[in-house]
Length: 92
Image 1 (spheres, one colour):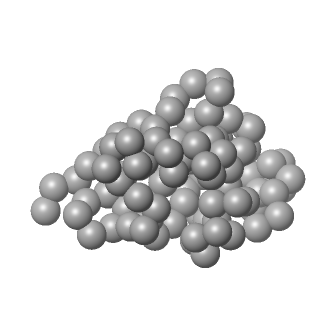
Image 2 (cartoon, rainbow, N blue to C red; image 1 turned 60 degrees about the vertical axis):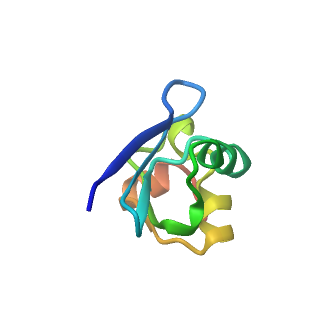
Image 3 (cartoon, rainbow, N blue to C red; image 1 turned 45 degrees about the vertical axis):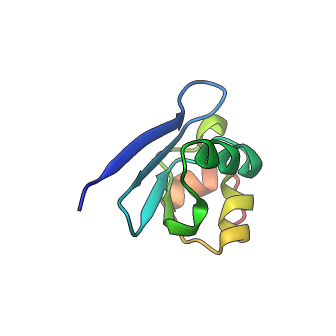
């Protein structure tokens, strides 16, 4: 089973990385809007259907912008430290 890693975006306007195989995947950071994340995944032939969780590296806006909508829409667990959750002022 091969592992697929791709950057959906990297930079001050949003960071989001998809890591997965044929069956399941995770997102690392969610700095893009839900709509933009879905659009970029579709362009690559991927979808949120395989995503099982979202991991957040830190609380900067370019890493967390889409987290609330993505997590709620797809009912995904978010792996985040308590300090990052607090500093990001997130309601998950």
